[in-house]
Length: 285
Image (spheres, helix red, strand yellow):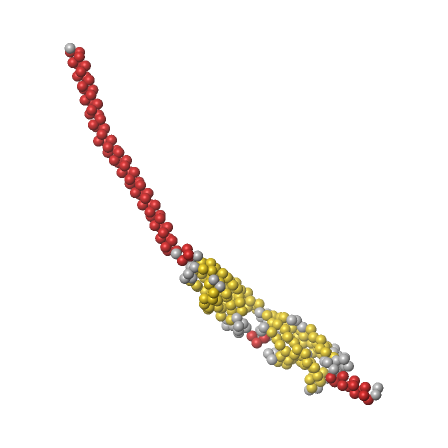
């Protein structure tokens, strides 16, 4: 090989593209382990020797050295702590060093997730509605309350924003409870958009949405009851009046019979007496 060709090969060895082949999970739950396996080479050198050091470096996890598995393969079991700065993703890089000089670099990016158990319930009475929401944060270390969290509801009427209300909260051993008591002042279709805000979800995370339609009867419970009672009272009064009138009529008829019957009996007796007197007169003649 002539000198020019040799220099060309040396230049390729130094400046050719550094090829990195890496394997790891695209997404893990916070607190879990992501195993990163990598190998690297360029078009001239399939390996760089035993004095190569490969590190994973990240702003949140720091610098972690990979274990050498073979001449060209390195691996690390990367444990991601359950800290807000490690959510919702890990952004870092794999760097290869020969002595103190970095000879290659490749980006590493994967998502981290939170498991939340959300249990909503509600109760509606007239124009009042109550919501209860239990939230458990299920991590590798176990179930936890969302102690530093706030839950808000964005209220809209007929697709028009009305107000944002913060729910009351109470924390327990393995869950947090949030409640809302809300009274509607006018009929319409109302939308409730519940979201949680904390150190993990600084911009908020939607929990669920609900919609309720309130109609005029929901706002007139006492008037409606009064109307029903008035109707019942009127029916009772009518019944009482009807009974009184009927009884009165019967009393009047009975009284009329008592007055008329003696007169009828007296007239009949007079007629009989007159007939008897007539017969006696005829016999006497």
